[in-house]
Amino acid sequence: QSSQGMAAVRFELVSTSPHGRRGRVHHGDATVDTPCCMFLTSGGAVPYLTPDMMESIAEGRPFLAHATFQSFWNTPGVSTLEKFGQPLSTFYHLKPSTLLYVSVSDPEHSEPEGPGSEGFVGFWTSSGRRKVSAEDCIRLSSVGHPGAILAPATWHGPELPVKRRARGVDRTIEFAQKISGSKDVAGLVLPIVGGCEATWKKCCTAVVPLPCWGHALEDAEDATAVRFITALLPADRARISHRLTTPDEILAGIAAGLDVFDSLFPTVTAQAGQALTFSFGSLAGTAARKLNLWSTEYKAAFEPLVPGCPCRACTRHTRAYVHHLLVTHEMLANILLATHNLTHYLRFFEAIRSSLADGTFEACSEAFVSQ
Image (cartoon, rainbow, N blue to C red; front, side, top):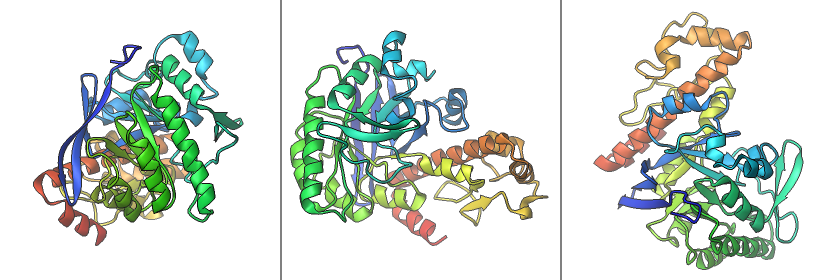
């Protein structure tokens, strides 16, 4: 337990192989199996869904919810949370078994925000650019009591000079040291940044000795980068990615040693009017990876989005009905598609964990790529 009485977060490595790892994230009495995806939220809820709907999609099992600083820095704001006097997860009406993870990293914006000014990391909100310091993060942790918090990082793209990337690493290390040294911070995750092997190694050398339960690979955007970085990290800490979000990227990331991902892809495809229908291992799907429900070919298609899918969209409605909702611009279309896509993604990760357990992950991945 932390000084505020918040449940400690711990990662347990269950098994490892050349093709991936299985583990568990422990949060109080709750346990989440990995590999897994966090529910990427806006203000504590996945877009188009309520907390109750999220619980239903998770079938009552514990899950990780990701809230970015962009979604709560202005509203409710740290001052409001201080007056509220209870954890941010309670403000969001999340159950105690849900691990609320907060970060400056926003998977919807893949480009780095830049340093802003000395001692701060910049990020954009709906009302303009904001900046956060290490002291701000410590105050948020002591006031909002999130289950886990990612220390901010300054990082730059690989096209910039090595010296500039090195300065970003230095500031990231400074943030990590300040935040990890505070007794008011619980559930700390530390970032790894660099943009090239030399600066990634420099960051790992400084950050790995600091106490935390996991590391976020902030600028690793392919399996080669992930493999290089994970080789420098302790095996008993979770490896988190906010950059790899598509099914192909996730499979490559898992094979390279990652454990936790974001649920951006299901939301983005729902917003585009598309339903996820791919298959993987024990997850049944269709011949296509996804369906574009805007297409008139579904005007008289009275079958579920994916036959056998347990979500409410598939058990109660048809492709034709979702198509009708889209062309009439009804919000219910996004709600049903978000419900289905997130359900399908959770089942995708279940199938991944099963394939890692029975040794079929590599074969299933190869079959998926060939679809």
